[in-house]
Image (tube, rainbow, N blue to C red):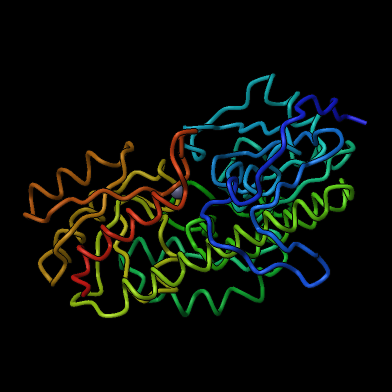
Amino acid sequence: MKRILFLSAALVVIAGCSANNDVAELPENIKFDDPMQEQAASGEQLQVVASFSPLAYLVEQIGGEAVAMTNIVGAQDPHDYSLSPQDVVAFEQADVALLQGAGLEPWAQDIVTQLADKDVTSIVVADILELVEVDGKEVDEEHGYDDHDDHADEHHDEHEGEEGYDDHEEDDHHGHDHGGIDPHTWLDPVLSQQVVTAIVSTLSEIDPENTEFYAINGANLTTSFAALDQAYQDGLGSCARSDVIVSHDAFGYLAERYGFELHPIAGLSTLDVPSAQTLATLKGEAEEGITHILAEENSVKRFAETLASETGLEILPINALAELGAEEDYFEVARQNLASLKVALGCE
Ligand SMILES: [Zn+2]
């Protein structure tokens, strides 16, 4: 066993460790009369490693005191990271390892292969969700998502089951241009609920003693994501504009779900630097009814600022939620993103 002793005797207040205080609907087989009742995680702590903050956040919400979490990338850009020897040890000593896949963590490809040989259960999100492929050439030439839907449908079947790391090497242009499979599912409140379910069932399988604890926390988290989904539906339901420029192509799942069009400056990776042609095309598009640029605090921001000064478009903050620090709350930042989107799109 790779577990360490569960040293903390602290009780975990269920409602207090969820993302909000809504009382979640509980699975029928769980009797839980008083939502404020204290429920202790018991036994030894599971060792869980998450590649980056959104996954670490989910594990912390679901696992609470029952897990010892290692967040590999932390408050840094997961697109641009190098594994340290300590990171490798953390992965190898874990009971459960969580990764996003689909090229988000190009630095983790080898680790995933190695974990298969060790006694580590890994969850690769790209393997459990249906991801959308963004075609590099089309985006490059036309700079838009006009063909986005078609490509998603076209490529869905042929890529089903190969969005993870296994087939990664066959994908020549992954991370090298604007195309590839979009890994940014954590921004989507509906897809996130599927990931919650997967984490709850994996933790319960490995640590059956805490099945109820994981189920209750997972139900609370699902309620929070459903509320966030509703807020996005309500907030973006009636808007004057449909198009917005974003600093990197991280918001495609949100755009699909809530019905707006993205014009990304950089590609799926923050390392995909825009070409002069891309910037020229965006300048043209800026004159056709786009009023705002949603810019993250990253290396792409300088391009957003140049574009803003050349076009007179206004910059608003957005956060791809990938680099959340320990102090930042996923749901709070997601609602700040919604506020920016509402202004950018002129929603009522
Ligand atoms: Zn990204």
